Image (cartoon, rainbow, N blue to C red):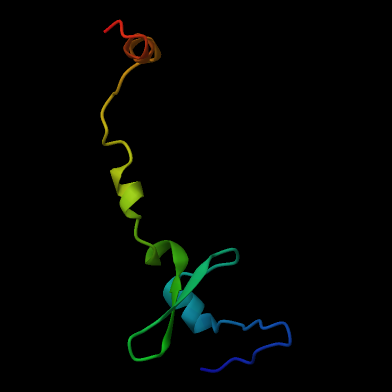
Length: 77
């Protein structure tokens, strides 16, 4: 399958590829360079793994309330 690049740098993704990847209008796609130098096209939301910070969200526990923090800063605790 081939496509032609327009003067604006746009390319039409062939229908067979869109169907295979589940790409619909409005979908985001990602490009990454493989070890052999080729470029791989993937659907962006299936390609991205959560960052190490996103994986840690919500794991800190309940924490202190405002009154408890104020008591600590005032030396009342």
